[in-house]
Length: 108
Image (cartoon, one colour):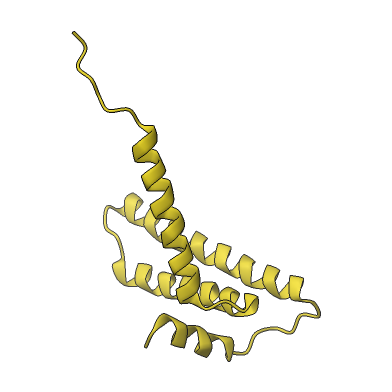
């Protein structure tokens, strides 16, 4: 299954009815933030316990992805297009950083 196919599937899943697009976006965005918190908490517990529950982390990442693709769908965007644009932005920032940083010189 591709990411775009998953996004199409996620868009068909029942979600609470909200009267406005802004409320639908807020609901999905808050769900995304909540799932990011679950990912962070799973990592925190792993640090505390000295052992990461990777199965739980994968489960929480899947929930995070569901909310992310649902938010893309509500915006009318294909997940692959969002990822491609994000990659381009990151590559631009990395390139700009490497040009802006002077080469290290030895002090004599």
